[in-house]
Length: 371
Ligand SMILES: Cc1ncc(COP(=O)(O)O)c(C=O)c1O
Image (cartoon, rainbow, N blue to C red; front, side):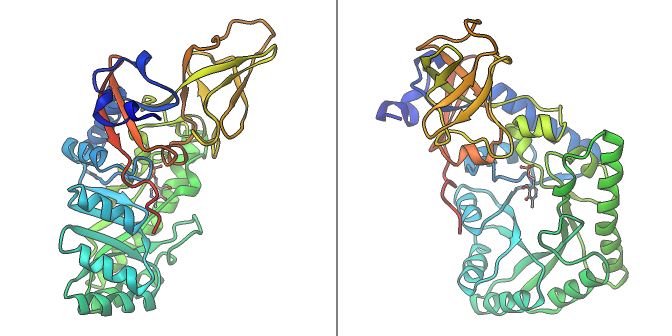
């Protein structure tokens, strides 16, 4: 991207004037997707704390909060720091933070915002509490519950109760509730089977909550849910907030693998055809511009042209028949993103358009924030 292609210099330009490749946000679709989340959460009486891993951008987080989100979810402490700097006041880091240096950063962050984290280990919780006391702050925590994904978390029931009791009685910590993530069930199909499977997983979470309440332990937050499951999880009795965020852009993974059809594609890569061959065309976007991880990108409006492969700087699309109609050299085409998370991190900024005109440029300030 050249100097003229960055920042506010782009505002007011038409799509055709943009140099490629460039990451675009269709602002009408983006606004509709946010409204879909907000309306559904309001209908089901659930708070929305969208995961921000797909955008890593405080301006987008502020849009979500201004529309009705409670705050955001992050994966990493450094992402949360960027969000706090960007004015977000209520954050969940949906991961266990384990080193003393990071415990200190997390404790210090409490001076500027409520930054909740998660634990699945009693020793980590005790060490975190000691650092928090030393810093003079209290760290809000959720107990991470393994509801079948087998990634992190303690098992539902007694193990949750035990860890929750330790958190509640450790100086420097504040027990805020529990979280689980049903990420292993997003692609279950057909819908009835998916509902059944997700309900069974969430049962463990709610049983754990009830056990905690019976023992007099506080559990104001029960957090779960992703874009691939949000309709089922938000409507499930006892879940208080959902972490679903990716639907704000949506992508082919949510549509084709998770069968979620309530959102519009808001994220595309504008690209230019750079070569025409007898059986394929080439665009100026390879794996350094967008990703095939989880799901391949697709050419918007050219359903018949399938991706053959992405090399570093070339996207090669197969023509169904030689000589068939296809975009020509120099023509701009848009690629619908296959998986947003692994695409946005390759870019410095989002260029937001309405009616084909650039309205905003948002810096991806969380890009590279991995600690
Ligand atoms: C802990 C956690 N919560 C929620 C999500 C869902 O996020 P999204 O709605 O962006 O797919 C994920 C996805 O990886 C996750 O790891």
